Length: 406
Image (cartoon, rainbow, N blue to C red; front, side):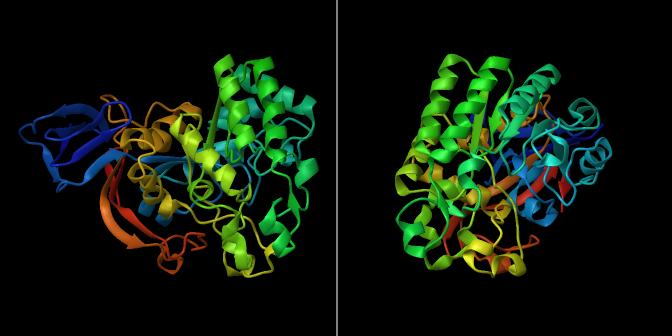
């Protein structure tokens, strides 16, 4: 039996709030509570930095251990669109195991075979193999009958359905959203209402079936209004967003900056303001990195030919802390968006500093200033739309199950 005491830290917990003057005690990889340092304990001096639950990053497209370690991420919900689609129990089981011993990987199994939107995948078998949710990947299921069956099947399995909400009938071939920037650059675009159309249908089907629905990224005012109304009716819906859609608008694509080519695309300034309001009023449940790194061969192309996606893991925490500094939400709410809420979507009992929870921890200095520079990222790629932005907040150390990740 080994006891570790984290002393001299500002303890920040989504449930217990922020406190100082006591130590966090961990025994055999599990948090046992706050208190004085017991005799014989291993002591870790946190030197006044902030100790919080490790980040649960819901919806990454690639396993990128160095980037996750640098970003304070201890668990990831892996999307089903990898080199091979996660529609087979063997693939799901392998994905769940390859992170050991430094990273918890929770696969999101494909809802339909090959993610083609037609035939249901073996969701029950994949859940038995370790899948913590089922998902539609980068695409929307156009056939409402198929989506209804996916939701009903997931309800019976008590797993969430993670969806991408853009009506493919409107977005096929588009690389950005309708507006002045798209017109000026001459880029193929789709109306922002494509998102609200997809959200509206999926909400109605979730309400009909009673299934748990998580919309991975919501980015428009109209869609936020639909989700607010659905939550008031008791629909089991949650939604997420990335820092890019909170801090950037479609203007960031000026000069054909392919690092700002994302999916869903960056929206108008009015939609960005609506997203900030949705964070403030609690409509948004999850803040995720959308980690989808791409190398120069996929990004140094004409905008319309470049791959959508960004390397987001290493900047997730400092960009989240900007919301706290701007007074949009307190630190404990930010940590709820980063840890306990995504854990709940995946059905995991973690993400807080409460006694009995896994000792998945990150230590960070919220005041350390630095400038984002993709060329210095430790992850596989550095394609970030935030290049050059000054931020504050650095992850110092990370523990998974009480064991430090180096």
